[in-house]
Length: 352
Ligand code: 13P
Ligand code: SF4
Image (cartoon, rainbow, N blue to C red; front, side, top):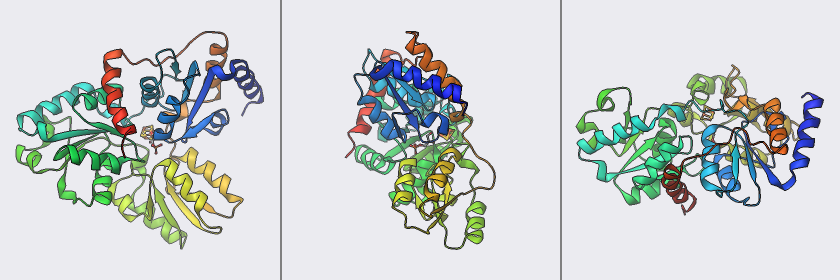
């Protein structure tokens, strides 16, 4: 990185002292991670944000839905800042409040809404989290989806899982032992989600038709290719990957799980990782010294373009503005949305 920018970021951070707390998601660039006070997956970061009541500014180096969640979970006098407002998430954008309200009408008309508990992935807007809280549901992340689904099936007979079909399907089938036939796919762009009343009534899991464009790139071919290229390789993928990829992998877990698995891996072991490239590259460099070979599961380069929007120039601009007393790019969820979204997030944080 540019040494001048590094020096400016250091100086501004030092000037702010305890007033600022910088959170960095594992998919952030190295130049940004260097300045993070904590790094983590989306579950850990949600908890870490809430655990810093003394920080006036929470600078969230991640994407928009994460900053919203931090705003919901932190005190009213704390300001959450996203260094680039264009850092969204294409998956979160696949479920809008209007579409989800329409879906609920479809479920109501099919006579099943009372049996349905919504479970929404953290990767969703505050509006979707509020919908979830209002209808008795919970949020989940990739590190607690199994517990969230078990909890939901204690509350009702069916789950509406938003917005990542893959995390929903993978968790239902791998962890809860359901069959693929127990799941139906609700397409928000089709009348009645493209489903018949019978299909809706017969399903246990109603999966929203959303996906992550980054993890969607991994295919069964990439798993087969890497096994051929590197005999004895362990394939470790994120649960946002397609079901066939997850089914063919050796291990599946959140970004935090991936890091822990590699920390515990024996010397000389070989790993192919199916998740975002900034993290995989960082892990490959870190563990090379321990003689662990780590490769990216796919042959093509695969960054999350919105995570990558947060770069050192944006971080410098953010920190220098805050150090000058100027609050920029604040993420603020309105009170009504916040109260229902908080209910759903707190249900997640209370999961056994
Ligand atoms: P986790 O950090 O929870 O594994 O999520 C991955 C992700 O895609 C975040 O956007
Ligand atoms: Fe969204 Fe996928 Fe990027 Fe995560 S990796 S922020 S789910 S687009």
